[in-house]
Image (cartoon, rainbow, N blue to C red; front, side, top):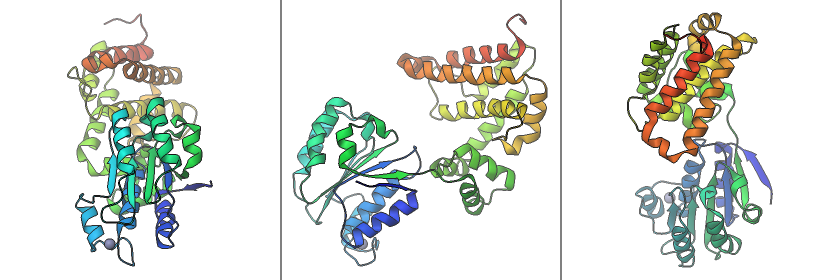
Length: 334
Ligand SMILES: [Zn+2]
């Protein structure tokens, strides 16, 4: 089957056409980064399928109303992560129960790549030969984890990231951000709209970022200067904070910028251009690259070690000591 290399909005237009001219297929695979709009499009698509009016989705008919209220009996979503085998079996059973009020029944598996081999095998037959009324949408950010037999059976819809400029225009219009800020958001979100929206809608996120950058620029030959960084990174307890990834991203992006400046590259934290530039004067490019490695190794070790959840503060402290040593050297104790 053909692959469609399009973005969320275009995907939705294509799917709308499928609904309008009655060419809705039975198996779809939505693939693309987290936060790019796959779930939103899947829901909008289901709503159009259930809509009884001419202009879909009308938002007013029985189908639309039930869908919006979250009570449509023919819509089935598997949200769990990882996906349990019992849930796949339940979905298999549910698949063969005819729709109650609509002509079709829509099934969405939100973390399809988190089905293990056993679950995927249990699901394979359903996906290969679904009953005529079923529409199955698999959502994934890593399609390579799906069995080739599953991949080959679905219509693949690839959600491509937006360009820097598109995101910049979007956030400056929607959130009236100024030049440097909107350019930072665009770069930081790497083309993923959901990520850009998340940053713009959460004031606290930008404040936390300011705090991290301030703490980094306060680093000095005194080893205790890492303490404010530890605090800014939310490492005041044993548990990983819910926005832990964000802390790491901000921290990494700062040193990535420093490394980029050293080789004449462009920076992400454009609204902090002066700060990054003056910090970069005092550290070596190799130190910045070393720090990036330390952070990425820490992240990998943390996610490989489930018990790590229990001691976030120690992970961060150790990481920051290593980062500090990348700048000031191991021989310089204070
Ligand atoms: Zn409707």
